[in-house]
Length: 191
Image 1 (cartoon, rainbow, N blue to C red):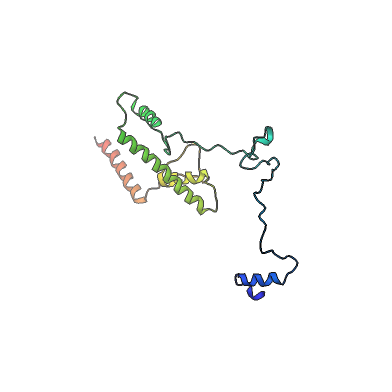
Image 2 (image 1 turned 90 degrees about the horizontal axis):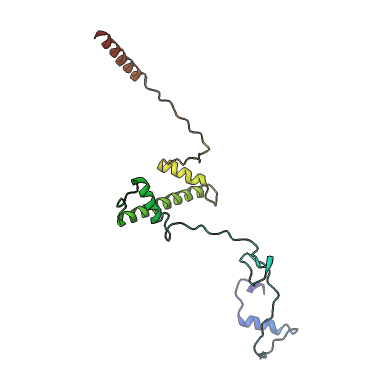
């Protein structure tokens, strides 16, 4: 028996084992009992997927409420809708009639906006994956916007404090500028 543990059982070994076990003989012909009737079950318990029955009250509510999915305002999978793009164009151009975009330009701008958001999200997800984190954080998007596109979102600042370095000119340049200033002063006094 130990030698057959690494090998699959075959029928001849099973038959040999059943012959040696007389307690539970298996008949050669099994009786056909006919169609089986389903067994009725009691009321279902609440699950994550919601109730399987139409029970009223608390039992009719799912155990965990699902949060509604985020719905984009654009048509289909667009980040920006044509209506919002038209509003933006009217704000920028002053809202005159005929100051719109042609359909080709409109489609190009919508595609550009989709690609821009997609590239930012992809890069931010890569950044979040570098850190051992399974969620995308606002810091990830902010870092990508600031480092790759030099876009700073007001109200969201990085933890690092930005110090503005005062321009320190080279000593030779300072001497030249002092000489130029002295020449200007001397030139005014001569006239």
